[in-house]
Length: 243
Image 1 (cartoon, rainbow, N blue to C red):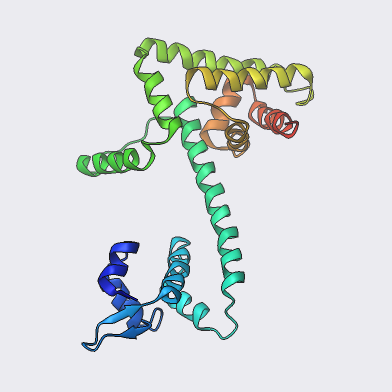
Image 2: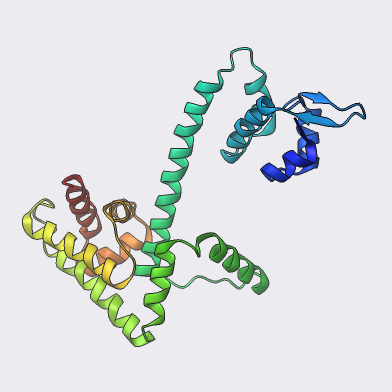
């Protein structure tokens, strides 16, 4: 048996939250001490794990109560569904990360941030660094950027966009042609050499971004001609499907 304080220290869930979960019937304690203090056993902790997974998936508390209070609630089945939803969430995050990297590599038009308080912008930047600063790709990108001058960075971007110009010359042919596939490999190697390790998974995510429209696709089409972004996306898809 564990006290509410011990459960809070173990799980990171505040004592106030644990008490609230008890009040709404979501996580009743297994027992109470003679003094009336809550006690939790392993079964209660397993239930708390399930609750936290639902919360991670952004389920409202009232829905979690309904789901877990249902007589048909199957913990094993619920866990399988949670795993599936977490995989989808992971895919979305990977897509967003690839999207952000794509913006950084290709660039976008200037955005007016005058409506934002500078302190807020600093806060957001700090949070981003805290969240992503320990990833190998983030460290690799920053290390390579620090070693380059602004002039070298600009030259690198121009060379990078030059690859899209080369791919644009092939857009009226097959994206699966040997020439197109060789250029996709050249694009992947360029990103790996100068920015961060571009795995097939990351490359596939970038390809989806290129076909998604928006400013990135517009910039690629401006470089290689209308239809280049779609062609590059199809060529990357073909390249990754061969692995």
